[in-house]
Amino acid sequence: MHPIAEHLLTRYTIRFRLTVLAWLITAACMAQDTTRISLLFIGDIMQHDSQLQSAYDAATGLYNYEPCFRYVKKYFSGADLTIGNLELTLGGKPYTGYPEFSAPDALAAALKHAGVDVLVTANNHSLDRRRKGLERTIKVLDSLKMLHTGTFRDTVERMNDYPLLISKNGINLALLNYTYGTNGIPVTKPNVVNLIDTAVIRKDLAQAKKLNPDMIIIFMHWGNEYQSMPSKQQKQLAEYCFSNGANLVIGAHPHVLQPMEWRKDKNQLVVYSLGNFISGQRDRYRDGAAMVRIEVSKIYYSDSLAATSVNDAGYILHWVYRTPAPNRKFYVLPVPDFEADTTAFIYDDLSKLAFTRFLEDARKLLASGNIGVEEIKIPAPDSAICYRVVWQVPAYAKDWTAGLEPSDFRFGIEVETDAAGNQQVRSGSFRRRSAAETYLKKIQVGYPEAQLVTSGCKQ
Image (cartoon, rainbow, N blue to C red):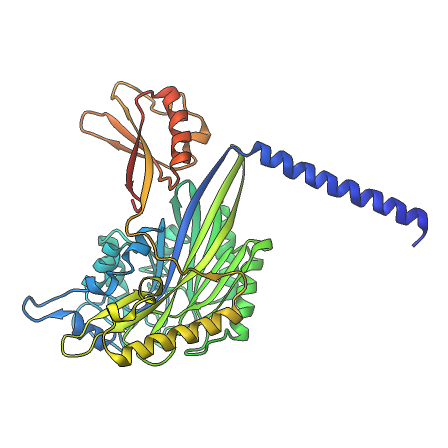
């Protein structure tokens, strides 16, 4: 290169870098507020015959699944949103396991009680009970007020409710869900099961972007069963989703763990397979899995300018313990709580060996295959406390938003009106007291009696 040209190129490169640096410094100074949301993804929720038998209480004729989720409940409660793959139908009696799953409604109720917020329903078992099973599953989840997506009664329902838009703490998420197939069972019209079709996915992602979400999540039912590494097709499809606007791609179906990649520079994260969250499968690699916890932050630079990104990601290993007969029970055991002393709960030698073997296998796989996603080994706190700002608006006040700025709504707002017309206004949840106190001071400018209250983090 000519010396003069090289000199000019160097000058312009330095000037460009200084301009970018100045913009970053200015943006940092402009930053006004940050809101956050924590997401917890869990894998395949299954119901084999052995699980049915263990949950049944012959004395009452009822099914009890509370023990299954007793020890992971605090992990669910500690996240703002817990999302899992419901790989079964709630198709009614007779209740059956593999190969055509129909679980008692009590299972869905137990998931709700434990803190699962959202279920994806497009998978290869969506049609195990054909049209009746698909529609009844939707009906039961609706009755429990559980968010769900992936299967629909008809095209009108899909058009109105898809992509699923979830708002929490002032952050909007668009959730999509697809499956590779339905075990050869044809979809009965007018029902809809979201099948993996790149043209449809591209169209759906374009529609999702029109909703202006802060992040787009795709839950995929894909890959080869019992394979611990993603297939070429999985990798290609993940890239396709990212190139068309997805931020997170979460995988299910292989029933074993597969690696995870967090591409920080691109704000993209893929989990190829979470494995079995709970099932009756006891074979090596299938008896445990991982939950993935993702922290998302949204930084506001002005009312019209904000940036959303993944700022932390980690996985929590868990193992499904099936106690010996005759009083057999299933428990999902989070590794951080049970690894230090397996004798405290796992009392038979074969199970202790299986637990140890699962840890060795999972850590070997993920330590070598993961990119940017580390294991979380610290137990979740037994109770998570969040903070909310609450204020009262009397019935005679025509507009409770008077005196508030658009920025005051970015953390989420809930309004309850009593019979007399008085309103109670509550902000979204804050995990940091300092952030809640800052927000409180803003609200007290117009509503001096506003207060800070504590609550559980799941609302």
